[in-house]
Amino acid sequence: EAAKMAGSSLSAPLDGLSLESLMADEAKFVDGMCQLLADLDAKERDVTLLLDMKDRLNNLFSVVIVGEFNAGKSSLINAILGSRFCQEGVVPTTTTINMLRYGDGKESGQIQRNKDYLELFLPVPLLKQVTVVDTPGTNAIIKEQTRLTKGFIPQSDLVIFVTSAERPVTETEGKLLDYIREWGKKVVMVLNKVDLFEDEESQMKVLAFVKENCARILGSEPPVFGIAGRLALNSKLKRAAGDIAAADELWERSQFAQLESYIVNQLTDKKEAAKLKLESPLGVAERFLDNYKQAASLGGKITEDDKVVLIEIKDSIEAYEKSVLEALQNKLDKLDTLLNAVQQKASETSAKVLSGPYI
Image (cartoon, rainbow, N blue to C red; front, side):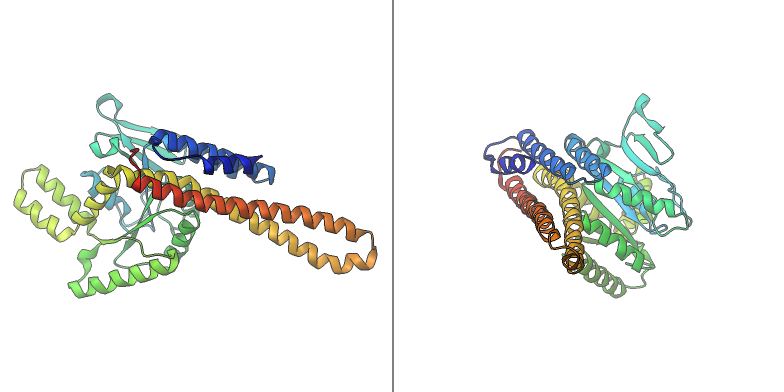
């Protein structure tokens, strides 16, 4: 029944649908996959996460900033928002998931939801369009911080991965990138602290290194930007204070304009934003289905290994094994069908959002 529901959702005509109708169509599709996962005895937390992703379709666009501690995540966020909202330092400073939302006047301030999640309401117009999530630095001595960051990645619409010019794309950063890839998330790479390079040639070599290694890990080359986050923030602070000449000089050195333009375009281009928003639950669903398919296949191999012994013990067990294997194959076939449906859905959604007139 779940497969039929998913299939009927896929076959529904999409021409002329509004964005709301497109989201409703995807929500029905996700419901069908959740039902199938439940039938396969999937972990409750997996089904819950997928349902939560469906509910997030109507929320603001979510940009999650990740990277190792001292890579410059907080300086990047401060530069984007134009003030020192996030604490910066040479030791791990962010120990919780900090969700930055819009709030002005009485609505500004912060709310500690629990020991792991803090919401900050800031009078920054950009936050009317997007929720920015500052995550704890990974590869710190406090392993809980890495767990928190990994746990939030599936909920993102776009991941900005910050790596430092001092140690670009380390082994542990590569592992985190691979983890992000498994969830089907779009990644934007930021090489921070490029002001440390002595010349442009050195910077170009490191940027090429970042592009090459990220393409190898992610399977495709992501957008890569070289910036100096602290210089960009200082430029905005100088401009606010009226020191235009100093602000212009710092802004030029920060190389921040291209990244800022890219982020703004991602948020103001409704088709691109809708495409990423709709693809997010599908990436999560594909990850879960692939995991359960592999688990089911492993079960089949164990049954085949056991068969050699079982046949020698009792001939009648052959009939029993045959029925078990048939049932297992049916499950695998269902998973194959649904995986194909997810991939087809993602492809159709991308094409429709980019070419359709409904946004």
